[in-house]
Length: 305
Image (cartoon, rainbow, N blue to C red; front, side):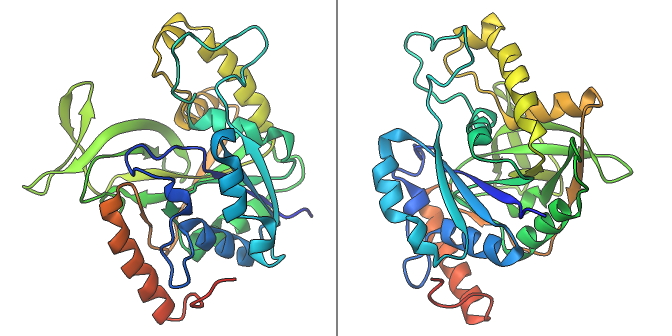
């Protein structure tokens, strides 16, 4: 059986963070968060990592994360998310500069992925148990197991930043442990009184801090690429999506459609790992402290590679 692939979404230009945070050192020996994800994925049984990046910073990224960096523990490849990569018959609207979104980024992996695969953000620390849990699920799938997707869910309260708002996919889970639906929530933050709210089209809406949310750690079978191609055409065919220069083709849009139509199921997995991430520069000291604590506890070596 082929080992699963890890697809790393690293094409974001980190506008809020102020630099290419994907390459920012947070470990004792200058490791980036990506390094810990690759280290965990390799020991969990993933055989290949594919980075989704932008041509604008490809040389810099490849110099920082060459295949040789990972000591031969995992195969490495790169694909590119660019505005002009659209289905035949569509073109980029004038003045559009914003990328087409997370599911468009996933679609870039179709040319190099032919195994079950996991998707993660480059700037999120998921922890070894999350990768182990994901790898066990993907490896348990029988041949031709189209549409048997999964995700690792986290409690919302464990995914907030003290320094600004975040976006999360709110998950509705059915009695069988499968995802019933997912809604992208923007502008999430904790108020001084302890309540957690999100931006509901300009008004504040409260949300339970124990809500299960997606941190973009999904598991898919290769048929997801074919479904995404079709759904992206439908997305682009809607005038409001082409005229809105900030419209995006999010992962929840595709997942919700496939679940709602009965085309796929998505098992919601849980794990014992602690999630943390760097959304704003002010988050970095806390991330550095948490990684140092894990190193001191023996979870990771002081020098990964």
